[in-house]
Amino acid sequence: MSFSHARAPGLGLLLLLAGCDGASGADAGTADGAVPDAGVVDGDGGASIPTPPRPLLDVTTASLDASGRLTFTQPAATVELVALTLGDPPRLWRMAVGDGAPTAVLDVMDPPSATGRDVKISAARADDGALHVVWQSDLGGVRYATDASGAWTESSVANGRGPSIALSMDGTPYVAFVDRSSAVVAHLEGGAWMTETVASVGTERPWTWIASAGGALVLAGTVGDGQLWLRSRESGAWVERPIDLSEATFMGRSANYAMAAGPVGVVLGLESNQVNWAAYLPAGSATAEVSRVGPTFEVHLMQTWAAAGAGRVYVGGIEELGARLGVLSRGAPPWPIVAAVPWDYTDCGEHVALGIDAADQPLLAAFCRDRLHVFRTVGAYADDWVDRCERAVTALCDEACACGSPEDACGFTSPETGQDSGNRGGCELAAREALCSNSTRPDADLTACLATFDAPAACVTDGYPLPDACVALRVVE
Image 1 (tube, rainbow, N blue to C red):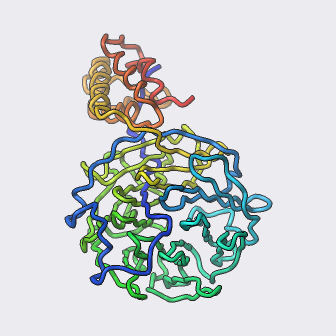
Image 2: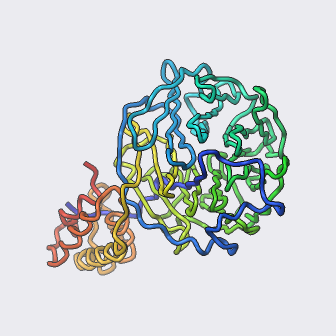
Image 3: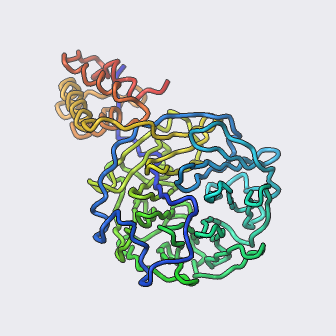
């Protein structure tokens, strides 16, 4: 078998994760409008956040209608995956992550549209375990379901689209959505939904989202030309928070925005002219840190998610070429990739959810091969994982480039295209992607691969053959 790679594949799914307590947010904030300081980061853009350890991901599967939309509740002792499937009848499901199989809880009267990648659902879990779920119905209205009374009910909130939900400290649900050209927030009061128009979002790619940060509700939205605003709920009013995103001209669709909040702060994920960005506003800071993410992996996200926990923030989405699932995290260097699952491992569809658990570790869910797959952390790689990956990459390219002809080629001939993979730099990028980026493969696989380079391998007509011990790092059974 030849190790072939004409160019580094795009990072198919990047995730932006955020987490809060079980009761997500309070209608309160600090007097100066800053996100409450959780004491985790300093005010200089979050420089004190270390790079998280690279997680090892486990995969569990369950049978579920692959038409469904997915979302995670915010981090707590129990994190739940909520799904809304569009079969006959359409149904709402819940599943505690790491505990059992999905359970159907409600036959839905007014489901989402069966088409459209922008149609998502949003859910919040109260301290007592009650769920609150919102979605955009096929007819364009905002629908709400809950079991807060002990029995599941479904009702209408208002006309609108793109809803999201968060809970105040006392458990009151707040729902944000777009109504024509306005960002509207509704809250439940005495059994009735009370609405308020917060800001204009224009008519060009309108978007808004609500979350909570350390006990305070936070709202983000567009201004009609792709630029974003951010507001926090303080003393019953929405107060604008300064956020400078002027270095990028945003041209993305509404699906290319995401916002999440937690005790660590607020994070926004966005796409700008086929470049992806993360804006991170640390708790207690008035200045957002804006960073380009993913350039090393030639990432262009077609969809974006966001999440933030007690001490971590993550970014992600679906990459344009649909190559893989992955997770990036704020750290050093800026926004390194910390976990990845090859897209062809699961043959996943476009409806994917990103979450974060109470330990600030990432969660992924996707419908793959007509089954629900949940990826969650079961451990972390050894501290020297990256160093050993680099040694394996160097050893592989030393031998592969010795097989290459002409001199600047490194012996990787694609059996599909017959094209050479390029020079030493291309070899290293391809090898790093193949050997070091699959977070579902145990540490022992890399150790076995690295040991194969003790003796040089023979060159073959098609180039340099990937050692059998390394195949497991990139080939899906």
